[in-house]
Length: 138
View 1 (cartoon, rainbow, N blue to C red):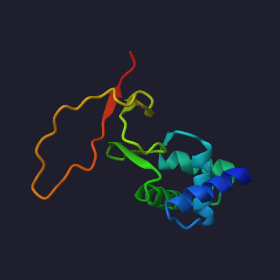
View 2 (cartoon, one colour):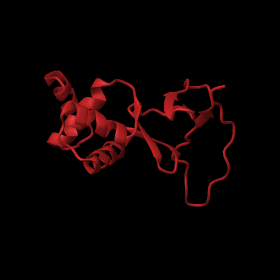
View 3 (cartoon, rainbow, N blue to C red):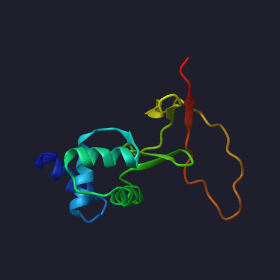
């Protein structure tokens, strides 16, 4: 599975967010912190966990990803209904989505300029603006 240093870093990552470092969370966090900046689905993380020998269910992976996202450790990128990626880079930035293979990549920060947003309903405020640029290879 992961090295001791990865487990220690995973523990620190969880502690910074105030999350209890359960065995399953630590195993999944280790996979996330050792991988650098990435975009992955719950199913992809589950497959990595299985390959690494972590004893976690797919439901546990979904629950952990929700907890990580709620705690600000990950950012959810919704591509379409049923296709959600989790981004280890949590700052606001646009994404490229490659329709032919379903992969996602960061677009350069500052490459998209939004000059105006519509008025929001009374009692609401804009929380974030997500930009996904869908690409098709020729």
